Length: 490
Image (cartoon, rainbow, N blue to C red):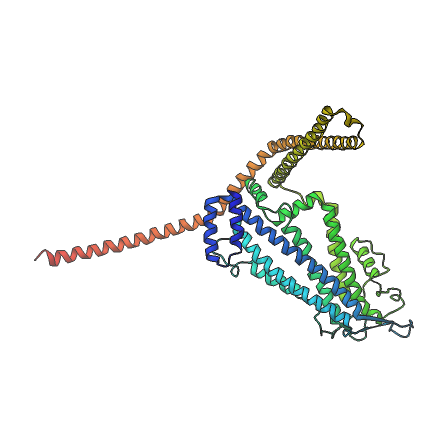
């Protein structure tokens, strides 16, 4: 019945008539139940994952092509150092090179694809949240907050160097006697690297193994708000050093290349102290950023421009944060509260149950194959001298032995995990009860202003009622007087 509803929903998703689709889907929800909604939501999440994979690949591929285009565009002309001459090197740009133009066209095409992918991401995400019943049915995409974030992402990812853009920007600097002209291709490439570097974190936040509607039900049963923060915490709980290492590696490359590009223009203004800082080499920028982010600071390379100092300041704070996260990954960054820990353990128990069943099936299959082979040996004793038969027997026995060891290992892990989980569950039951009581108290406190307002309205209505009653008595007195003077004589 669930498979029927799932296939039925997949056909409806391709429908062009939105009103008819929503009407039939709502009828399907009533007929097939909540499992029907979950399968539809998982199919939508799978489409969202495919789109985000392409967007992430296009984003980092465009960064690589933009860097190659900038390197092909620049040409260094070295000049022998003279203490009386400030000029050390000359950088020339030639954007009319065919390779540069082709690379810029490719970057523009990838940028358009990224923008289209971002729009599809938010539209599908809006539909996914509707199926999760997070968003009200009567809400539209334009009057919800997703439109603001979509426009912000489009503006950030639209930054690149299109074909035909090749001008200089004059930047005043503290060490130069006159302002320095910086090519706009360099600035746009630096911004492109920074603005498109977040896609890997976005992918981990939306498409980790923890982010699905089944795990959401477990969190809701534990009174935990299921969001992307919980998914990121779970990912860092599983492999903190791997994720931090990837983020650190990407950060070093981006900051190092940006620092090198911002400082290479100031090789015009060399002195005896800055002569040895050769920023033509990309690895020198990486070296300076690594020494800065690890707070070592040898001083052999350091920025002398305002833009370079801004980059180094950002890299210093960001590097301190990443190193601190790596040191305290299992204690401060991914620390669960009691309800989140229970949700995490329940999800792990659920996954271990599935693995336990798969290993049991695999063990039974290997045992059946081995004993079936031994039965053939009992029926035909001449097979014992067959080399192929002996090799097959050894292979099947090894598989059966390996399956048995893996099954026993998973069984021991399951039993220990269940034992410790029960102990923790008993120990944390009081904390959960206290937390629920505190939430109830908070809810009661939150409605106190409304109660006060209602009491104020009640007293105000009482005063108005008294005033109306007095007016009514006065009118009754006037009616009685009128009656006594005019009605009775008649």
